[in-house]
Image 1 (cartoon, rainbow, N blue to C red):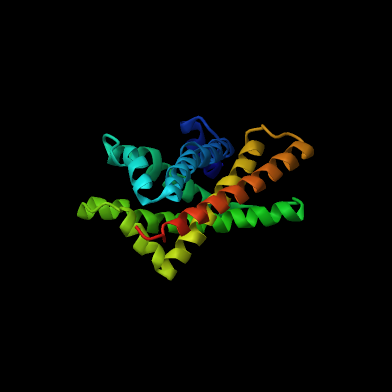
Image 2 (cartoon, rainbow, N blue to C red):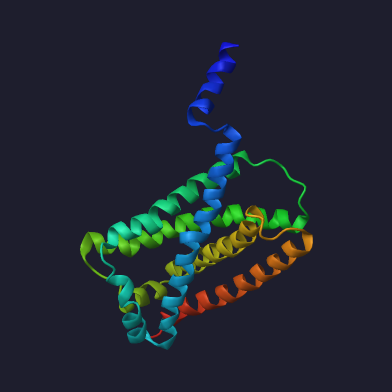
Length: 220
């Protein structure tokens, strides 16, 4: 009896049961993957697509991002904190996941979602450390020539391709699961349609992303 009261006390103190907290945290996890993380990824791909028109155009068009006021604070609130929360709670979800009876394709996508989540988190850490963190530590901007040298290194290019594709898949499949979690795609037909659209979106973004990385290999 004493143990039951001890277990119930935290739930009463917070006004929420364990299941209710999990429900809330899971939805915050889902939402953070779309806003702001997913939104930034779309924007990041869009702004870097200017490199397809050449290095000088890319450098000019990305000037806005480099000159945002209170940049460190903005990056922390919009990216670093949401990414850390999304990654940490994603690990919790993976560790506590129960076997399901989804169709084979859905199970396959779920497994890829977990794998790409880990790859994306590691890649983002590498990308931030070698670009933004490097700038804050040295004052040296990652200009076209620096990105060009990165992409001319086969190991770094491969890392960027794998990491970027992991980010893109995790986002596009995450959009699909977001529509289910939030009750937007209800029913098998609606979910199948959304799933197909998200797969198509992945293909488009994957092609564009790889084209961007390859474009950085062009001489300045």
